[in-house]
Length: 264
Length: 64
Image (tube, rainbow over all chains, first blue to last red):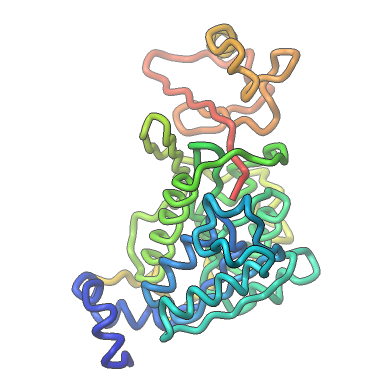
């Protein structure tokens, strides 16, 4: 049930998807991997949209070089853990939701525990090795993964539904080289909000996700295109019989199983 | 397909580094698709394009 002040806070979006939709968001638990350029706008917009529980993981502390794009971290936060800095802002933005912040490096030993119980994983990482780890955990647990990545004025995003769509390793079999990547904050904002929008749509059971579609954003020419992608039969992560591919049952039912029962 | 890549390499000039390595081959992480389907590296030279085929080639990004 929504509180009276929640009906007021979310009045404009309840006009869009009703109290039933808002309750779905309130019942949801979303795991955001990273509290940097992508993680900040993702967490902020999911928080103010009323996602009931947000889990945020990041190992880093705030550095001055982060401030051009990591919009939850401000000058006074330099030296503070990013997850603490983000948590403080998010609580102030929306005191009606739960935020759990973990200062940790995501690795093979903890990914299962960290992701455990989430309805949705949002990839806000800055490297492919950790993304591949999240992808395999998403496949194993049957939890959708919303991928995003940025560099310069360019960005990409896609939504992975285990068992139903191409996975991260189908689309990107080889990791791009690691680097100190140039980036402008607006790129992080554009891609992060596309990911947050996908998260909201998924939780509401909306169709037409970025499923089997790779979105490419070119901020220099202001063009946004989507390309169809498909599963690779020989994908080492999700092909049939592969140990990470889960039980072949597809996506784990979430409360109300929204993707199977779209709202009208 | 080989001819398309070769023309692209010539046209891109110094900007081709994002797509091609020092010996002129496609970098391993670069995505190459024809009509939405991934083109395998060992098909590059033999694949014949038809009128209207759409070729997409891009280096995925990794930052966050």
